[in-house]
Image (cartoon, rainbow, N blue to C red; front, side, top):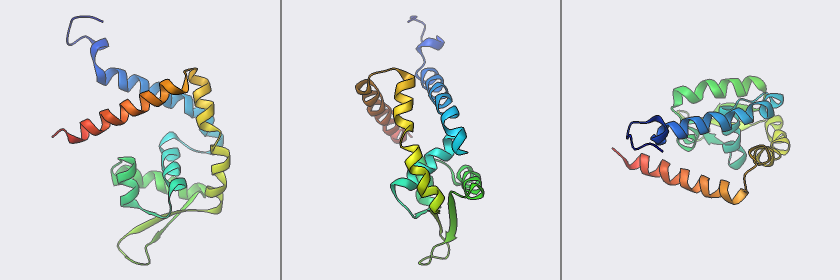
Length: 145
């Protein structure tokens, strides 16, 4: 590492950005046969954890703006993985639910984490520590005005 505070290699943002792009690129060939992009996969993960979810809840959970989330949901609906409906308890809220096809996709998706770990070739303990550090960074950044 250089002593230059502005050296690219010293920037946390650079390391995070390149790591994110590199890891997401590993997902692409695994997700393509499922007709999913990485952002759509994240939506599906959230729905496999809990459904139905309101669009607002999904937006908050995924840390995505509703304007970014909406096209993802439209594409997932066109693929037949989800459906969007008005909430019976609140007509203003839009609920997102998995279809049977979307629920069935979960079994195939269960292989993804193992395949990614295999492709990275890193010990799981190292990846767990990294994930915890990233959550700490996300929390710290969220608290910063």
